[in-house]
Length: 158
Image: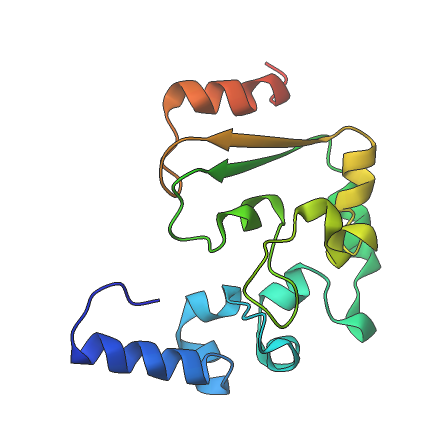
């Protein structure tokens, strides 16, 4: 979380980790809506304000319209950066993640429940050949112009 050392950073990191799904942190710290701790799935599903909805993870609230629209994309280009230190694990760029309850091993996207049960339409898109998994060197969003051209221009219709 907080990458610098020092007592303030250590305390801030501990506070954020222990209260990440609290109403206050969810309302005032935007990145908190993107955090999913595999060892706290019940609180994540109940309190996290953004990611569970985006991933259609809440069983009684699955949005079929969202799934239909997502799966109607002509192409989906998912770019994973080899040295990403923002997305943890970096495989989340391809919808891979940890198993519920543990921080290892990393489960490949094709083996996640989100994919196998097709909560967002990712499997339908992939089965139709419209998902493109691209791996590039560099850190988070540090894509070179040439890698961007290779990864995306073929799908822009131009």
